[in-house]
Length: 247
Image (cartoon, rainbow, N blue to C red; front, side, top):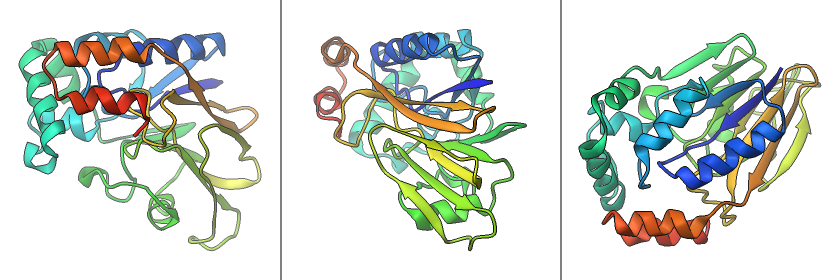
């Protein structure tokens, strides 16, 4: 089975449509989204609708949680908080109910998905380094797990019989790795709608459950249109500016 994994979307419809189009070309059979469907961008309703149309396995992101009131907005910086409030004012009841229904973590027979980290899903902890990755992998019960939240693609590999802290790590904008010889892999799929690794292209992943090959891929999208929508909506201009920089 070929699984397409969408990173943080953040209401960026142009990036989401481009990513979905590329994954359809790859003949993806099953869809996953790692949370934060909303926040920052100007198309929250359309992004929710497309994620639902794909029948994605979705987990709850921290921006999703803030929009529906599960966590306080004081947790966020000024720009993110403004976008959360703007989004909350525009979502329909059906959209709010969808976000409220999202679980913190999903364990599927072929994978696990959580927004931030497996060892503290309710705190939306980040995986930035092998230290946090090892803590998450210690809680991982499937061969592969997918996370987002940091907006920076990476993969952490644990070999059979190795120390829990002995991980092989790859940090690249795009890469492919065979995880057959590893008992667990934690894959940060990056971000569809707001990459922060200085590569402005939308990021997503593909995982083949038969070959055990995981791949981080990128696709160009219409950044200018996404930026224009953010500015026209009256959202903070920094949220538009950063898209062309990948930060």
